[in-house]
Image 1 (cartoon, rainbow, N blue to C red):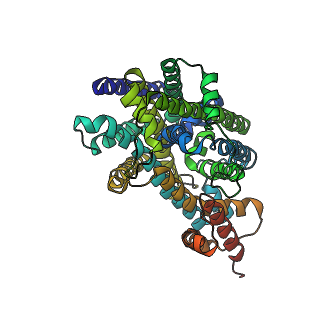
Image 2: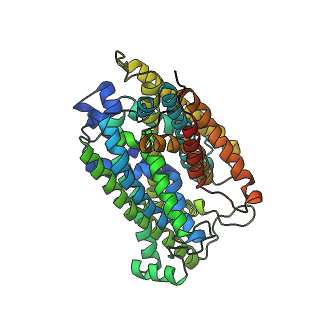
Image 3: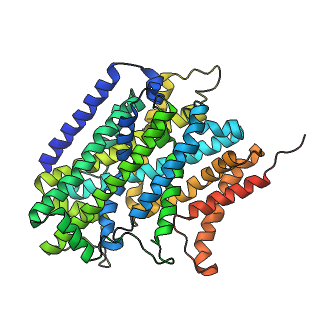
Length: 486
């Protein structure tokens, strides 16, 4: 089985490099292709590929696995994503296209000043480097635990191989390649989920409507938690989904850079709204997959993987059943789907990190500065190396749910960005630029202590809504940072 999976993985890698070769043959080349894809990307291709870029390896396993513990309470958050995408389409994209931005953090310099630009760019780099590397870490970890570990291959070997592959196929074409490889990877990701559902339905000799009826009778398809005090209260989920999208997509260079490769603002807006609707469909597929996995486990009487305290580990349900129980074709489909999810998250991130550093720290967009391809390639390799270091260094510390760690990182690092952009867009006031870095550091530190002591002080435990508090604190402090009068 392991050898079959490795052969299929090798063939998938060849397919990726074939796409790289085809996309690099014609049209713009060099930095224009790497950073902007010539601004000629067809919007339907970008919209479809955005699904794979949004659904990381964490989501690929967490959404189906979470059905056991939290039913379909994830759906209100997905609906909140649509509201967030609408905000991006109507508020942020017109701004980015009007200013003809390549790096979205160049706006902060135009609005506030030099230090504000560097602050926003640095917060993005830290957040994306850590968050995306941990998403890729989970892909490597799962494949190591189920495939490479039993073969005696050390953990660092697949980590090096995966990062090297991503580096190679993004090295020359950059975003021009990523837009098209994301389309391929979205397809494999969805096919892995659909194929697993179909095989389970055939194994249980049951139709999809009958499966959903059984799941509904057991309470697993309940969507709306109506308890206002519950962590998964539907209104809270809706708002969380909206602001997650605004910050982690609309204020994120990785996600927005792909949108900015569309020919016109109208195309970019159609892309964003179409991808939001596709996102609903794809997440319904993954929730149905969760219901199918539970039904298969119950019918087969298998013991699901659990932690030391006997609690079922949701993130391991899908890989355990796909590889250990179903095996064969589904094991291969799962591995390729997981790899596709990891690649589609990491390739755009690596390109975006390179773009942000080149434009916001090396001044590639400044008047009189012509960025060289050699410098861009050195930066690209440097970030790939940092990416690899984070993956390997995190291995001894993996003792918590990765999705919680990733959202914690986002809540504290995207909060200042939310406050900065909200202040810039919805007020006309100027700020003392030299105070912005201090405000951006103080706000998440302050919010960290608030979250730490809030159960004692207020009887309330902050979740991802710490992002909103973080953004609000940043906004209020910016109101106080008035420029000095000459």
